[in-house]
Length: 397
Image (cartoon, rainbow, N blue to C red; front, side):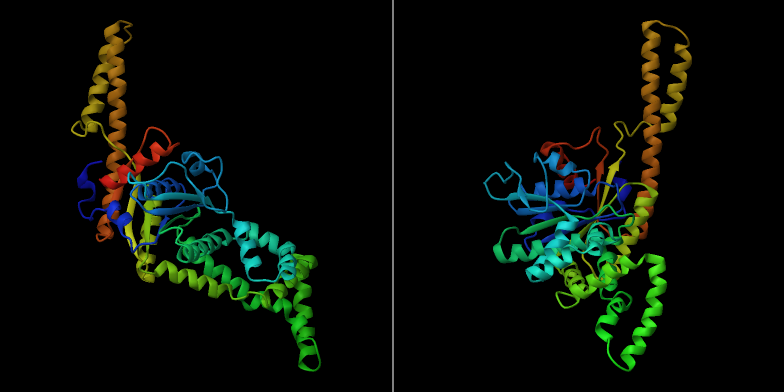
């Protein structure tokens, strides 16, 4: 892709961002399947080899990050990647993979006495909530980010945390899910399930209990009586223990808005991915969150941009006709050349479509800095591959 593709947009200066010592959190976000994990890992490696102490938090279920970094596995504890540092010996890289349920368990264990924590952890509703409730992964990603930042400030462990956000259907889920989950756990609907235990008594309490009994009898038929018992027990257990999920979400949300945080939006040069990127850019601006810029991933690169697709297609057709059905060496060479020209014509069409989509994005968001990474022949599977991605990110366009 040529430099004119992003003529309307400033260049995203990756090395300047990584070198900014006042920047302590970088959040890589975007639609699913656009290369967030690879980008986050490449940024983390490049920052570490420039002398920063970095922890990269990934939520990629494929676990490619562990393989790329030469680690046998990643878990909920940051582990140092061996052999990564700056030429002067400074800098280090730590990596971890979010364990959603374990992080939720840590929240419980950190805010409850052992007996109450065990009661919550053993509750069937809690086990479902911590494993599969919509938005829990996004909430726990932010929770883990908050934990890492607190640890970094207390121990000086890392001066930069890079977050690979969950592979959600929508990039906005990362910002919306914590408040949504907090509202659910703190909301009136779920708290009314413990009303009989809190409101039992005389007079109005008995009337309220009678009305609640009619309400729960309907819910029992829909959800099942045991589910209501489990939910009620769960809410009663957490109510006096550490409640205020919404407050915890607000604290981490404030961290995301802090001047020491910056967002990098990742997108592929595809209509849906760029639409998601546009939504996210607009949301960040509306919420006053710091945006570094956009990384356009897997961009089609042309080996000979001066040869147009139309010329290549015409040349391919001519050579195919010349070769005909002949089996001579010359005819075979003509057919091979024709195939290569046809491939170039296809890639030219892809590049033109990508340029059009990119230009539409930059026209709509002219102030957003942009960097692009060309599509590579194979997936990244080691540190050298991550270094190559980092170099391409720094080159920009």
